[in-house]
Length: 257
Length: 314
Image (cartoon, rainbow over all chains, first blue to last red; front, side, top):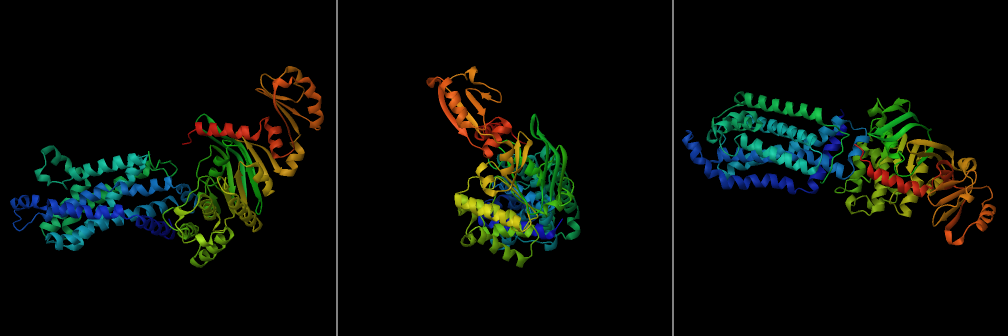
């Protein structure tokens, strides 16, 4: 793998992304609006759990951040399908860039976008919604980055499975939504039905929410998020391995249809 | 520079290449001519490392192209058949990306962008969005992306398809210049006239096989006999079918070194009401193709288009 070639692709992907920033803006602005609408709903739940000073943002901010990050998993695959649509995929493949160069160059921008999306919401959470983070900011940062990596890996797996852009959107949206809901980022896990509570740990989003809860509400530090981070990294590794088994650079993808 | 031997490829039941042998030396242009569906794109794609061959070998600059794909890609420049540019960034950014991927340093890249843009009359377009270019301008950019890094082997797959006359001439000029500078060029096309203009060596591909190769003038001398072609409104009269003649539906082809004399000989034997058209096909690459395959090139091209549309390559 060559970092020089990967970074050329990465910079190019950022330029393409910035040429139409509407999606990036949407996934950053929408969760802010959603938190404004929903945070009151969670205040009583958190107070009943013993967090007397909670105003609801302690759940709404990480919940919406994780949900929208999960909804956007298809974005990782979009750049691959777009290259097929523009007939530039074969050009890239015929260039000296290896498959690894292409993967790194195309996936890293999505990791950065997801990290930015999560980070912005946590940054705005304080001034806009009175979010008070009681624990370690370093632990929060690690959680954000590992979650972004894990979700992007899921996005690549979806890309490997999808043959058309419609399939990417469908599998990505349904998969992302299921992952967000089942992982307890829409409603607290404790409020979900028993069967859903049993399934929740099978979602990386569950571990993200567990880590965020520890840092935001329970004053957790780096040592307290080791388990969530390791499990999310494990999910990321699993998604990457499955994607590596299914992804074939020579497969043709249909941009629309 | 390029050595292809016994190359075979099939897509399910459809054979795309059935034992192709081909050599291109440094500084040489080989025009690979064939109708749609002849196997040109498959061959170029295998050499570029985009498809796997079922059998055979490909060497580029002495390297096994099927095994050492990454090393080989550093030596080739490839412009696929479909125009592939990034429409949402500028022409310069498109060129920069592929120049950087090819390993050009910043200074060399700047110089090469200016040189190639000048050669293809794109200097004024460098800061325009690629998506706002006309079809011909996009085709020029598409070709420029392949040759920016002065590849040792340039693979152009139907480089001038859909291009206007000016674009076609600019591209052909640049291809000649690249060859003069030492690059080997494999130029796939289905335009007979273009091959004659290039004056290059030609490899005629038909149904996945190279059926003839050499200089256009040599091929014409070796294979092409003028042909009298008569098209009837109904069946071809059996009395007109002589040795060497071919009948295809209501079409009769009579190869002859003296076509005018042959035409005058057969005309009195024909009921004017039964004759739809007549033509003398003079020696040319078209006549070579006719002599080799028994089909006219444009018919084969149309048939190939239909076949190609029927085959969905994986």
